[in-house]
Image (tube, rainbow, N blue to C red; front, side, top):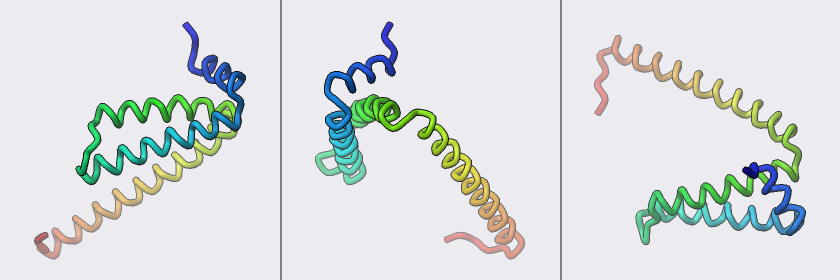
Length: 110
């Protein structure tokens, strides 16, 4: 079976980096439109349509990892995930303290 990376390399070799970057932009734009319609619920998108667009974006992102160096992407991804985790942990602790404080003051949410 052919791996995603092998297919990605073939696509880049066949159509070139420039065209694959453009295609990635188009796929991302299509996902943005589907998500916006889903959120607005006007001429809405279905979860199935969104899933299809996510698949397209993920395929193109794999190709962009090849173009822009997997190791570099992994390094930034690691840093960003660590920072996000810190923010989530801090936010969770803050909310817990707020709830504890409200409980001590007998404040009721409206």
